[in-house]
Length: 327
Image (tube, rainbow, N blue to C red; front, top):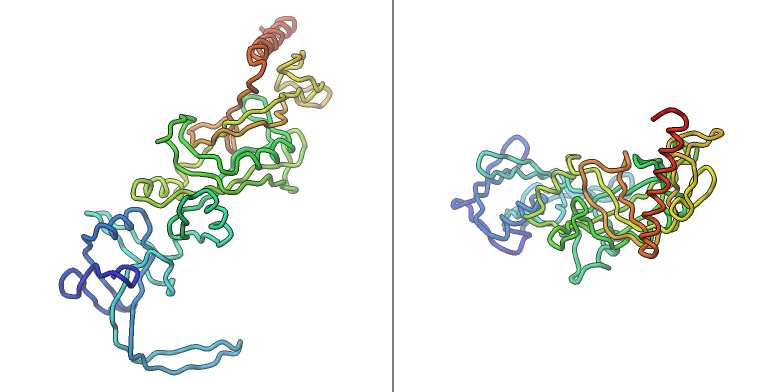
């Protein structure tokens, strides 16, 4: 049966029950569409069985709990489960042609009641724990990235608010059929045991995302679990890009300091501050941030002036290098 309520096989037809050195073994050839779909989506979690006329004895343990040892029973049915089984030791071997996949209940991450409540704020129908796949995402941090820029601690805290509910896509390609997951919780976490390259306490923006378990995304879930789909990048909007040396807004009033250079012991970088919006986050191959990734965009107002300011800044950097004989 499936979940103890629908027949999908019969002993002697497509079901074979045997006893081996581990316990009861069931082999089921499935042609039921719902069960096949659940298997391909990774939603089958184990076996269970129904019994009646059970005989046994109860014994009380030292901690006050009772243990029942059953010596005899009548087996009524065995069931494949899309919910977590009472016996975690049960396992499933799924065969599709020559490929074999072994799965146990412990292979599936737990979804807590609190997480499920947060997820259901974004769903039309109420999802169950077995319907969703949950995974953590390191969106960005306060380390200097490959563009010579970093987020401030305040910016990370604000982004934690802005990213709740935002969708996950691939390669920043904003098409509706490219949506794959959604963030339901995010927070900025400070690691007091670690410092950045410029001496500040390390902080990172950690989010929890969910996707619905379907046959279509079963391979993506495997790639996430296997560490293949790992690097991410964020698309967001910030109001200020402050020079870490002199405090000038590099977009409004370019200074002569060059990113990556050290001035009186201070490394020059652009500090991204005052986030105004978060658009999306994406799985990417090579993120701007070594530990995560970030794609920056500018506030909509005065966009042309800011582009001109960036060009002027770059020209000034080139002029300074020429004066120093490095170009």
